[in-house]
Length: 114
Ligand code: 5GP
Image 1 (cartoon, rainbow, N blue to C red):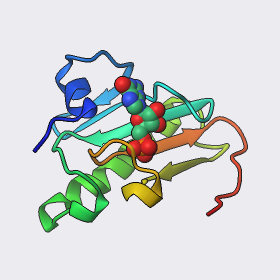
Image 2: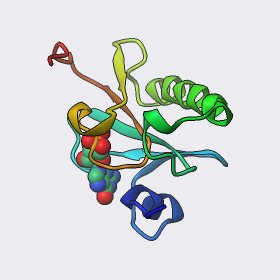
Image 3: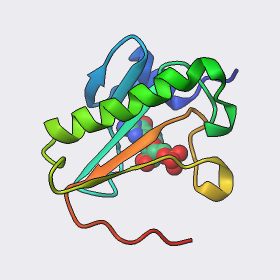
């Protein structure tokens, strides 16, 4: 599988502003934030997209959402509200082919549009 920019960030060869790491998950600030808080939460396993998750990945997908809640608390947006998004494939706006979830908040977010 081709190495993506997120694999390089996880292994540390490209710098990032890390906010969380364990054996399975790495989270860091987005380089082009779309909101005052914009964090990317990424499984270390290089799953290309949501289309590619298997039964063996269900636990880490759940854990990523627990990490999102934890980070929302730590980053001060838990009470005001936030959004967790996955973009899947070209029409979904996915630009990096390594599964990731966006945690967005810190301001009133716009309505989702097609
Ligand atoms: P996607 O469009 O695939 O859902 O999201 C990819 C995200 O990765 C974008 O929000 C983009 O700004 C972010 N991104 C791309 N390259 C880098 C990088 O080198 N460092 C960081 N921190 N974020 C990146």
